[in-house]
Image 1: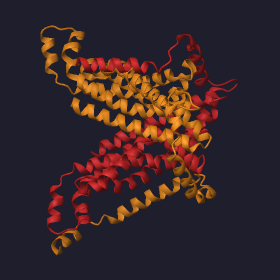
Image 2: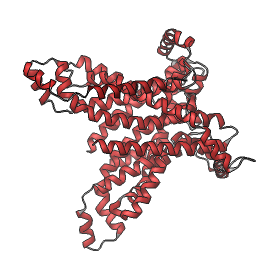
Image 3: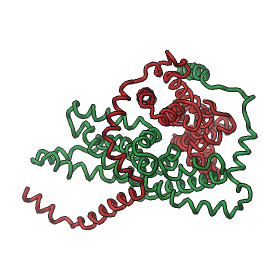
Image 4: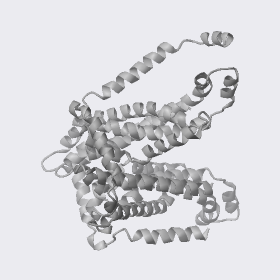
Amino acid sequence: MWYVVIAVIVLLVIFAQFIPFDPNYFMFDQLGVILKKMFTPKGNRTWGDYFAYMWTLRGALLDTMKMSFAGTVIGSVLAVPLAVLSAKNIVKLPVIYIPMRFIMNIFRTIPAMVLAIIAVLFVGTGVLSGIIAITLFSFGIMAKMLYEVIETIDMNPYEALESTGATRMESFRYAALPQILPVYVSYLIYIFEINVRTSAVLGFVGAGGIGAVISDNILYNYDRVGATIILIFFVILFVQFLSNYVRGKLQ
Amino acid sequence: MSRAGEMLKQKPRKWVANLIFFAIIVATVIFCFTGSSINLYRLSTIGTSLRIMFTKMVNLNTDFLLGVGVYQFEEGVIYMALETLAIAFIGTFIGAILAIPFGFLASSTISGKVVSKIGVTILVIIRVFPEIVLALVLVKGFGMNALTGVLTIGLHSIGMLGKLFSEAIDNMDKSPIEALDAVGANRWQKIRFGILPQVAADISSITLYRFDINVRSATILGIVGAGGLGASLIIASYNWDWDTLGTILVAIIVMVMLVDAVSSYLRGKLV
């Protein structure tokens, strides 16, 4: 037990060399100033304007939802063949499932924000780059989660069907799919929830949606940034609540 | 086949409902692409762009990778990757320490139904607040450096860690606590001798898992100036600097895969 504690302490000491720590440069008053600027109306704007501004954001919010929905659906559909080909119990050839898992892992390691940066370079700023980033991001997560499910299904019905002379596709359709489908739907909703959270901030790098509103206003209109943050907060909270509720009903 | 085929035909026909359901999904996905600024010129050149990107990305900028030649070591990818790991590691450590009291607060076994509701609510609020927005606020108080990244990750991690810790505490075996109650131990003694020995393995495993996630977050926090690889990444993208971008991307993939492997190995040992 003690060597774990010592290892953690040694790593903390080494890594601490990378972190600058100088209390002389801390500006706690600035922290207060920015929070006040964010959560009170600016200049001669009133609280009415503050909340009216939230209503003007409905288009941006719809864009975020579009990115999340299209990305979740397309990414999750594309993930199905990859997940099946990565499952050891369905595809029994290591030559196939090992490279497939490698592809999946590459997509999974790249953060969505980085995918968005690259997508913006390709198709320009806007919702399309967000859809591409969310699609690739969902593809990675769904493939990983799904192949783990496929590997843990009960294989007896599958083998029984194969022994009656059913083809591999037929056995998969009638013995494996009924076991996988409910979990797949539940994961679909869960990934949508993650994607709403992710796509809300993708606008920081130009991928459209509500995050773009924050980066547009960050220099001069802190009150609008604050209003947007409040809106994002409640939307994420609502989607999370909805997702938990629906997934609870599914089980 | 014939018998099984007849049986299958007798199944209720759900295909009409299924078809309508799929049509709705497909229509919604198509609707999502409306107004998404599809640039036909860009799309027609996408093959060329992809080729340029891959040929340049494969040509890694080794000077930049190692921090030699025209680059200072502190400007190299290796240094920045280590800085990213440092942000994630120290941030996770701080988050885990801060999350322990929140975990106890949110567990109904320890603090009772009413207080645990308050704890759970605080944790939800922390969890839902986007990490990068938190970094944006903290940058004003602590400057554009790695310390801001550490604090962001530390504060944001409390949300998930606290929730999972409280679940670990609620799921443990209650009999040692009852035994301690019987001998008249106070609250702190119960936590120290009845709870901590039971949940230590769970807490370490959850923290390792969160470290995994935080390494990914730490790579992007640099976009708002909170240290790590993100700042160079966004600057390279503004300059269409594909070889630099490729070098950073490779560093991210290797780093995250390594951390993933180490973390799942250690978690396997713990369980």
